[in-house]
Structure formats: C-alpha cells, structure tokens
Image 1 (cartoon, rainbow, N blue to C red):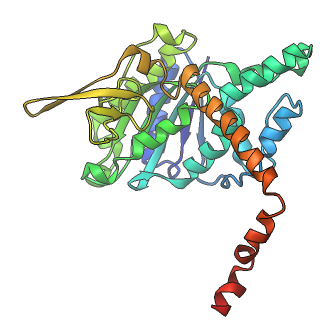
Image 2 (image 1 turned 120 degrees about the vertical axis):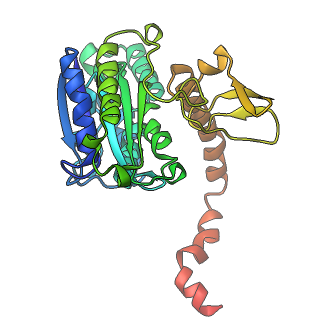
Image 3 (image 1 turned 30 degrees about the vertical axis):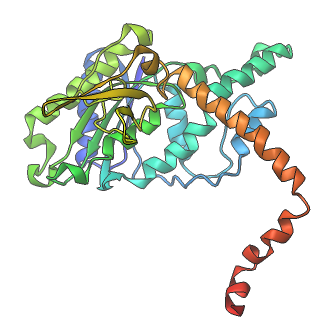
Length: 323
C-alpha cells in the first residue's frame, strides 16, 4: 500500500515539511511512501479540448491529456497511490493556482461515473479484459489535506481546505483529515510548533491506517469537525430559509438556532449523495448527459443562423472601432 505526498509549495519550505512529517508517520504505520514537490513542474491549465474524453469514448484503455507538460507525472503518481496527502499554500484566500490547474485536468477526465459507464458499454460489446479501462481508475483511495497560510486572520485563508477538497470528487476518494496550518507568518516555521507537527503526523497515520479498508468501515477524522459531516468544512450556502447546503459536498441540511448556538442536521440520505460518493458523482454525470440531449438539438436547429449571429463577436475589434 502506497501513500503519495504532494507539496504545491516551495522546496523544503512549510508545505514540504508538513507533508513529509505526515509521510514519516505513514511509513511508521507500514505504508510505502513517495513525495513529489510540484513547484518546478509545468502544469498548464485545461484548454477544454475534450481530447481525453474523446479518446476514452473511442476505446482507449488509458486516458491521457494531449498537452505535453508535466501534468502526467502527478497523474501517474496518483493512479499508483492508495492514499494521497496534499499540502498547498494559500496565496489569495484560496489555494495556489497550480493545484487548480491539476484538478481541472485530472478530475473531469477521470470521472468515475463516466468511466464505469464506458466499461459497461465495452463489456456489453464483448470486449476482452485487455480492452477495458485501466483498473487503477476504479481503486478506492483515502486522502488528507494540509492548507498552509501565513495570515493570522483566518478569513484570509478560509477557502484553503475547501478548495483542496475539490480533488476528492471525481475519483470518489474519502478524506480522513484536515490540517489548517494558518498563522505561519507569526509561527516562523512549522518546526517551532510541536502541536502543528503532531497534527500532520496524525494525518499521515490516519491515511496509512485506512488503506485497503472499505469506506463504510472507516469513520476516522483528524482535524476540526466543521459543520458538514462529510467534508468537515465550516461553510454553508444560505437561501433565506432553514434549508441550507454544504457548497463543497452539495448536500442539504436543516438549520436550527438554540440561543447563540447554530445546529445543522444532515440526513443519512443526504450524506450518502455527497459529491465524493458514487451516488453524487452519478447525479452530475446524469445531469451532463441530459444537458447534451437539450443542447445538441438547439445547435443543430440553429446551425445556419448561429454563424451569422457570431460574426460581430468574431470581429470584435472592428465592430468596436466602428461604434
């Protein structure tokens, strides 16, 4: 069983140190470990070219991006891992952009619902085992996240952990812990904070000890409890009623107030349809399929008129100049 540690921070600085501390604990708990620092890797943003999905639908057994950069290094390492620990810095309230570049390319192209449906289709067509998708795409994994911020005021790092949780969804990975390492500007260095380093160690141990177990047998959580019982983040989307939503997991709960204390109850049914579950990922897959059924007929019906409607937008500079 392998635990992969990924740092999106500077080499041998805070993110590196905290991820490595987690890996030390994972190794001590019996896991094989690997560490990757991404700071010098070139991971460009997704260009929405649909190359990965088109090749999957044409029968490819492995999904690859057509862009020739370092994305594939992280992709392959994640596929080989059974557990993943990510540490990343917060620069402007949320996680550094390189992480989002990776998630935008890794997540949709490895969407578990789409992969399951593609394999079903191949099996129905009588394809051989060698013609099915890479079995690593269907392996359950456990993850842990470390958000690293310099600010003393927490709202300057408040989207760090919620953004890191975006990595879990498409592959239906289960998160077993968060470390919110803010106030690093005053701490000076994480090694000066023994309690913080212990949290990182506990996170690594939790990931390692979860490996190979079914999700329903693991209820481990390392870190603050938060509000949502699935992602443990403290965020809620409000609509003016007591019906509130976790914007990370997409599940609904009922809010109540007792004096100055706020309570939110989430049903088991809602928890079972969180974004990182098979039910949740299929909800999104079916939504996309229904969108295609609505959108394509519109485009076909307007195939002659749309190019004319688009002319002034394609000739924007000229149109603006003449106004």
